[in-house]
Image (cartoon, rainbow, N blue to C red; front, side, top):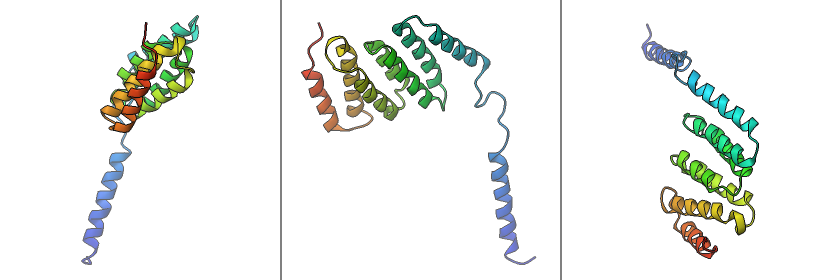
Length: 167
């Protein structure tokens, strides 16, 4: 054997080992939704379709989003479902709080969702005052905490202070 062929054989062997590892079949239960989770998600989707009003539809969408947020790759889907819930019931603070709890480990996704919520609810007075306060307070907490932007946190604190106090 030539002196350069041994390192070449080792490199080819390492590459083939890595390639076989990457394309191996997943063991049962890894990365695939379990039957119970899948049935719960289908039931939540059926409740979304059968909801008679916006508030019930928003809660059913939150249930489906909670199930999606528990999955490793389900955060974008959960964010979309939470946004649909916020559009279904724009005056609900409960939807904002549920989204904050579920997306607490993903501060960037939560930040984008809260900014979109503030844009969707319209003017921040009247019936939209409570959810606007909740979104502003959560954003301020994000900027004080994991996202660390003191200027934005102070600006949101000023926006919270300028809102009429809740009755």
